[in-house]
Image: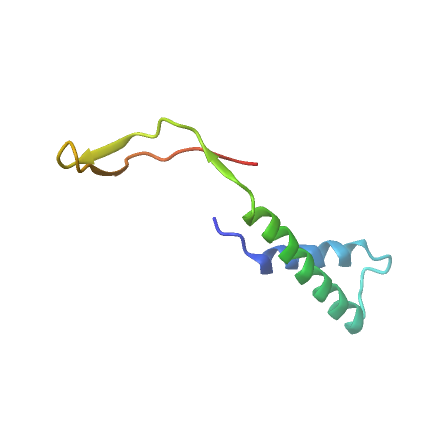
Length: 83
C-alpha cells in the first residue's frame, strides 16, 4: 500500500479539529491547521520512506539458463522489517 500524504494530512486536521474546545474552527484556523497538517504529513511520510527494509533470507527463486549465465526471479513473497 502506498503512503498517501493527503490521507495522513486529512486525519491530522480531523484530530486537531476534534481537539478544539468549541469543535468548530474558523476559516483562518482551518487554513492554518491544513498547512500544519500538510507539513506534518510530509515529515511522517519522509520518515517512513527513509526506513530500511530488511528481508529475511530464504525467499524461493526459480532460475533458468546455463550454469554460467543464470537468470531468475523470486517465486514467493518475502516478509520485511522496517528499521
